[in-house]
Image 1 (spheres, one colour):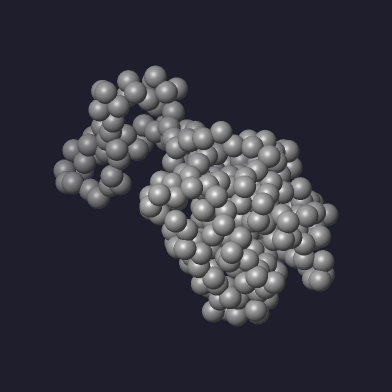
Image 2 (image 1 turned 30 degrees about the vertical axis):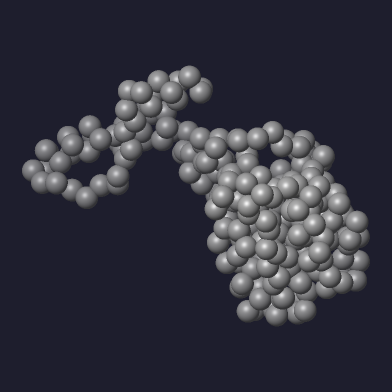
Length: 262
């Protein structure tokens, strides 16, 4: 993904990454955040919390919908920037229309020259298009593993550019620029930002990944316990129908398609 290993954090999903960044940034009353009118609630919900809680100003950028061009998207952001703008948030691929915004141009032509960090919602980009975060020149990028990567639920990725070095330059007027609030190691900066953000109550480290792998491994005990056949056998044994989770059973065609993809 065009990033260094210390810049990548495994998260639970895009929302987890978006909230980790937005709630951790040292945004203050009067700071302006630009976002588009095509953002997912994973981005708008935490933004409105910041508005209500800290007095952050939210400015909605109306991006073109019909007959749009790359330049029109870039211009929409460039025209919205003001001296108070402290952050730009936008979706790489919008969930409403599926349009792919020119993320690299927005970062390099609008954000970087104005010293504004960028947070990109990449829920529908990871696994769909090739990504190079260094070339894109964004500051934060959040995405999912359970969408176009076809991975299990509660898997995601968060990119944080070079331990926030550039963010500290942009926000040199603030002693602190970010707090890893979604972390069990938030008070121990000597561990490094990646480990701090990765260490969320131990649930993003080893055990959940092993558990998820066992659930999708047909030879494992856990998968057998959750199989529909095992549930039916237990129902017959007790003589009544029990409540159980809904388990998706792929058709033969879907199984073959998955095998081809694999």
